[in-house]
Amino acid sequence: MKLEEITEPLLSWYEENKRDLPWRRDPSPYHVWVSEIMLQQTRVEAVKGYYERFLSALPGIEDLAACPENKLLKLWEGLGYYNRVKNMQKAAKEIVLKYNKEIPADYEKILALPGIGSYTAGAVSSIAFGLKKPAVDGNVLRVMSRITENGDDILKQSVKKRVEQELEAVMPEDRPGAFNQSLMELGATVCIPNGMAKCSDCPVSHLCKARANGTVLEYPKKASKKKRRIEEKTVLLIQNGQEYAICRRPDQGLLAGLYEFPNMEGWLTEEEVIRAVEGWKLIPLHIRTSGEAKHIFSHVEWHMKGYVVKVASTEEKEAGNLLFINKKESKGKYAIPSAFSAYRKYIEEE
Figure 1: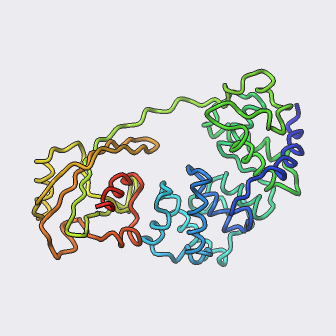
Figure 2: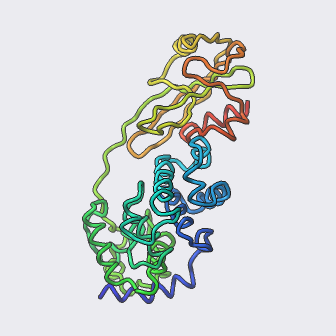
Figure 3: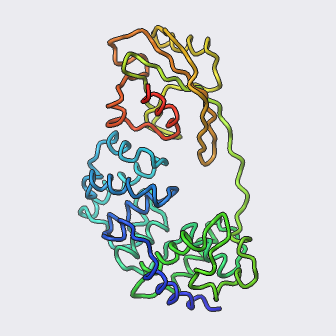
């Protein structure tokens, strides 16, 4: 099988079967860029609403560059991996200063922008500008490893580079964006992960070595991941009348610069929680548990135990590093990571 044989069947299949997605209706460079960043680590269905809301608030690159950080993080709230949008803003500021507010129609210049790797640069270059550059993500690597029955570890950068080179050699000059999207679409809807591919729906199944040899489920090959570190935390829902306490995370590290419910390492007893609250010069009146929750990051798991602590009413808006806010401010101004969603929901039902 010659790899170029997949091109025409894929393009024909894509035109007939592609999903109707908001970013495909108006594939401007900015729209493609926003959608591709959002789609990293996030399901398509989940992205649709965020995409529309983000563009409504920030319709252009200049708007993104000038957006206050709190508003930006609030728009991203729920998508996770907040460094993605922070890097988008850094890139937007660079585009405003260096490229007259327009994403440059140049793969290398796009690749050099903050937060953009070869996949995103390839997607924007090919879809928005018609440049012959591949966009190789996990979906594409899975499809290619099955078609070619290649057992190399797809997590290796050298393997991704090889696949990029192979695809660039067979991409059609006139439709590079459609070709890239056909491979992404095939991996997302037919040659799926975590289960048997829908080979009967695949336009290139007759060219696929893994299907011919009955080895589809053996591909792609990946090196085993390191076991995630488990961290135990106690989360405090400190209520001051109709307000509750949040605090800002450090500017560096996990969830940098976001707001969170005050929390401490380890699982604390009620007595230890009371002493901690008193340390903020607050007077605890009532304490009760608010359940356990778990959140999984790429390298760490948080196992959380929560307490609701009602304190004597105070007019002060701050107590140490704590900031008291109401529910309206939480919904409209402060971005609280989804890691705390179990407890945020609990507070809002109070």
